[in-house]
Every structure is written in structure tokens, then in C-alpha cells.
Length: 305
View 1 (spheres, one colour):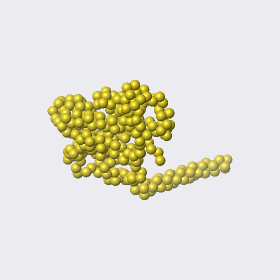
View 2 (view 1 turned 135 degrees about the horizontal axis):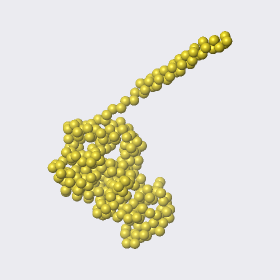
View 3 (view 1 turned 90 degrees about the vertical axis):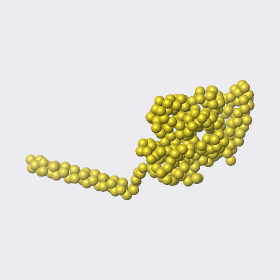
View 4 (view 1 turned 30 degrees about the horizontal axis):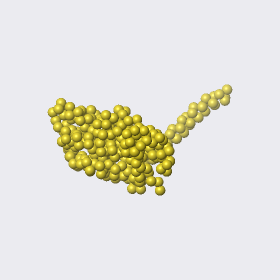
């Protein structure tokens, strides 16, 4: 009986003691975590918006609140999408030297190289849910209209040089229609007819005055944001050394003007794997080529030292 009374006295004391210990442990852990957060010095800041911004030599009216906030949105999206933006910065030295001379040759402002980044993210094999494909994201019909071969065996939407020339011709046609490069860029996303229809409906000739679908409304700002970040990555806290960037891989060209029965055999003959052959020639869409018309194709073979 005495033991039961003693136990009734001790039990609440033991429970209270255990609760006290648990509270102290949790409090200590919370204190330690708070200390770690304070000492880490992590700080997130909105990316800097320059006093003046232009696209293809045309000024962006960022003195207007709506324009400034639209650009800010895209800067935030890309400056804080670290993995993607770092990859863009790394890939730029591999692909910009390919497309820059073509843009210059065709009289297209250099800033349109950032349109290609916005379209495909430097992925020559990119394909959209709507089946737009390649570096410049051509739809099949548009690609064929602009001289690209598209079939089961050859799809030149995936040929960087050829698709860049076709994109340039589209951009030149759009410039003839709209007279300014900002609307040209918007039309690459929405289509010339779609942009023109909204210009007429809204009685304006200015992209920045258009009420349009969200994707197209954000499109030019996204290109401008990519340009700002990739031209001056350090300003947006990206520190990528030159030796971390991806270099151009030296290649040689092999002429094909007939059929190829098996590209795996073709690759081995030229000292590379089937995988590497397709990596450097993604426009070859199958493991063989009939080429019944005897068309001349140039196949890139990487030179592996």
C-alpha cells in the first residue's frame, strides 16, 4: 500500500522531468538552427534592372511601370533558375560562334541569337508539345516553306546552320511586314498573322502596347533578360570561368551523295561511334539513308585527338 502511494507521488515528478528534458532538447535544437541561419549570411536580392535596355537596337520603355515589372519578372525567373542559366552560359561559346556569322551575313541584329536560346535552350534536338523542332523550333510546314527538308530520314530543322539560314529569312520577311525588330521577335512566337491581327484589332503598331496571350506577352522580355544576364553574368551573380565553359569541338566534313545502308557501319568506318555521329548530325533521323535523288549532304565527323 505504501509503495502504491509512493509511486503516485513519484510518477508525476518523473513525467514532469521527462517533459522538461524534451523541451530543453527541442529548445536547444531550435536555438542551434537559428544560429546556423543567421551565421550563413544567405540573402536573396532582386536582380538589377539597368537604366536603359534595348533589343536589336530598339529601346525598351522601362520608364513605364508595367514594362519595368514585366522585365523584372523575366530577370527573376532566369537569374534564379540557376542550373538552367549556368548551362546556357556554358554552352554559349559552343553555339554562338556558329550562328553569329550567319545572322551578320543575312543582316539580322546580333541580339536574335538570344531568341534561339529562348526557343530551344541550346538543344539542337528540342521538340515542343506542338511538334516544333530544332534549334529554332520550326513547325514542319513553316520549315518546308523556308527550304528545309523534313521527312522520316532527314529533318533539317535539327541542322543548326541550315535552320539558322531559314530562321533569318523568316525574320527578314517579318521585318518587311512590321518595320521593327521587336514586333519581328514577337511574331516568331505568335506568327505574323497572329501579331498583325492584334495590331489591327487594338489599333497600335507597338509591341509594348499589345494585350496578347501570356506566352507572347512575356516573350520579348524573356529574350531581353537572357541577353542582360548572358552579356554580364557577374552582375547577376553567375561566376563561370572560361575553362568551365564548353568549347567548340573540331570536326571534318564528309560528303554523302548516295545511299547509306547503315550509319553504324558508316560511323565505324570514320573512327567514331553511332552515338557521336548522331550527336553531331541530329538531322539524320534514322539508321540509314536512301537518298534516291542523289542529293549532296555534308556530315560532320568529330576529330578526336
